[in-house]
Length: 252
Image (tube, rainbow, N blue to C red; front, side, top):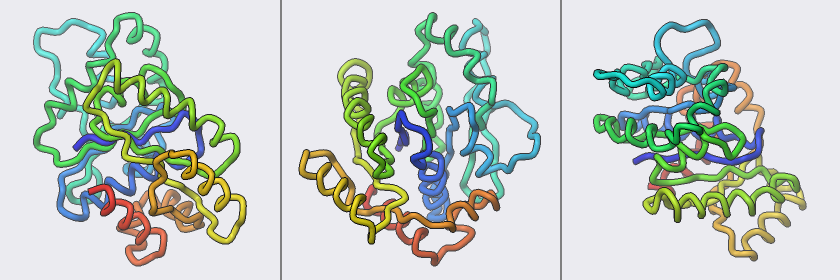
């Protein structure tokens, strides 16, 4: 299973959702890898910490794509183990964006798909994306089988949601007929506030695929980021962790 967590807006929880769902997958015994395509590297830092790390990353993979090699390195060579059983990551790199124009000009959008298809030893692949509709997010949508869209009940986020859904549907038609839009997951939800309830009700009325399980706003998520420890390992019985588990179960 290859799932992309995608939104063109920043700050909606893409990295948090990708990492925490992947961590639950790993905790349940599934060999799982997170692919971090965002130059900000939040998913990478969440899983590996912020210290300088050695080894190859996603930039090295795309640099290899740009050069002809008789024996290119297998995608497994770019994977790093984390401190948790069954949980791995292909790290991002802050200079990843420097390659974008070259990759676009050489039409390399299928190379990530081809690489991930070689990772047959993994039960689950989660792809974290940059907050833009660009080469890297398009590559992720081309490579994935399922697409999960985070949404934070903000009016600005709502305005961009329609364009986002149209972009994903266009990718399905033009590049990846196997891609399924699993739904929109409402993140940082405040159940007692009237505006989030109103926005969610209106989006449902418009026929958008809003998932039933919402993720609450909680300081526990910030604590989890600071500790570089996914919720399932840091606070397995916390309300937000249980919401993530419920979301994970609903998707499987």
